[in-house]
Image 1 (cartoon, helix red, strand yellow):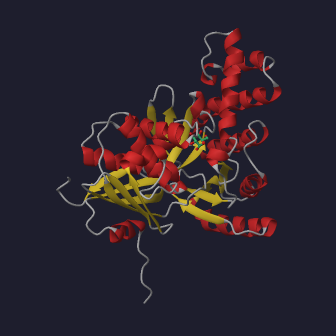
Image 2: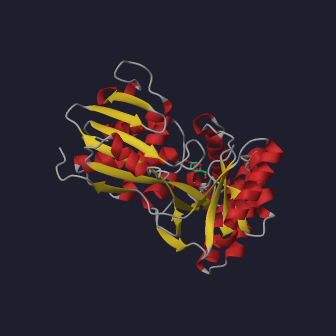
Image 3: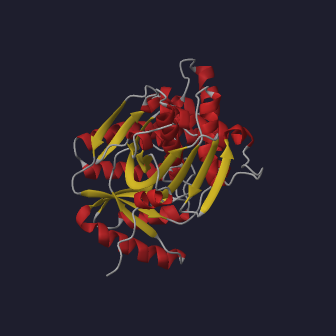
Length: 397
Ligand code: GLA
C-alpha cells in the first residue's frame, strides 16, 4: 500500500518533536487591486490553502536556529548579529533566512524583548512565485516572537511590523496588502481592505467556484525588480499633482473624474502609471459590489480588465502571463483571469467554475507546454483562514 505523504505540518513537527508551538501562515492571491496598496488604495486579496508551517521551541541562548526542510538548509543567527546580516560563523545570511532576521531586527529596533528559538519550517506554498511566501515567513516568525514573549499587539499592528521589516531590512517598498492578507485571511472569503483607513471586510467568494493558480515558472526577484521604481513613479505623480491640488497626498486622493485634468501635467510614463492606479482603485470598489451581489461573471470581467491595465499601463506583465490570461479566458469554465501580485513573472489567478476546474488545468498545461516548452504548474485552491498559533505544550520559557 502506498504511504500517504506527510503533510507540511507533520513534517515540521517531525523536524522538532519537542516543539512547544506550531504556527501556520498561508500564502495569498490578490483578486483585484494591484499596485495600489502603496498608493493608499483598496485591495481584494484572499489567503489560500497553500501554507507554511513553523514548529518552534524557545531556547535560553539568544540565537535563532532555523531549519528550512523545503530547502534542506539550516542557519544559526545570533540576535545581536541580525543587524549585520551574518550567521554565527560570520557568513552572509542566505536569502530565505533574511525574512526571520528582518522580523527579529524590526522587533528589537522597536524595543520588544525577544528570545532565541529553534524553528523548523515546512510548507506546500511555492516560493518566489508571487504568492507571498516571504510575508508568510515574516508573519509566522512575528507570531512566534509575540507568543513566546507574551507581547501585546493586535493583528494589524503585527502585519504593519512585518511590512516595516520588508521595507527597511529587505529593501522592498511594498504596501501592507500581503502581510495583511496572510494575517487576516478568512476561509471562503475575499478580503476587501482599505489600506488607508485599515478598515476591512470579508466578502464571500462566488458559490461553486475555485481559485486556480497557474505558475508560469518565470522567476521574479521582487527586491531587484522594477517594483521600487513603480513605487517611485507614483510618488513623482503625487508631487506633480500636489502642485496643482494641495489636497492630493497620495494617488488615492485622485478620483476617476479628476484624472483627465491631471494626466497632461505628467511625463508620459508617469501618466500611464497614474492612470492604472486611479482606474484600479475604482475597479476594486465596483468589483467588490459585484461580489457582494454574487455576480461572478461581472467580477470575472473586472479581473480581465485589471490584467489589461497591468499589461498596457503599468508594464508589469510578460509574454508568459499574457498568454496564460488569454488562453484561460477562452475556456468555458473560466470566469476571470489575471496576473496576481507584483507581476514581472510569477503566477496568474483564475476564477473557475468548480466542475470545470480539472479540465481547465489540463488544457492550460497542454497549451502552455506547447507554446513555451516548459511545464506549467497549476494549483486548485480555496480561500483559507489567516495565520494561527497552536500550543503543543503548556510551558513556554
Ligand atoms: C507585492 C507587494 C504588495 C503589492 C503587490 C502589488 O506583492 O508586496 O504590497 O504592492 O506586490 O499589488
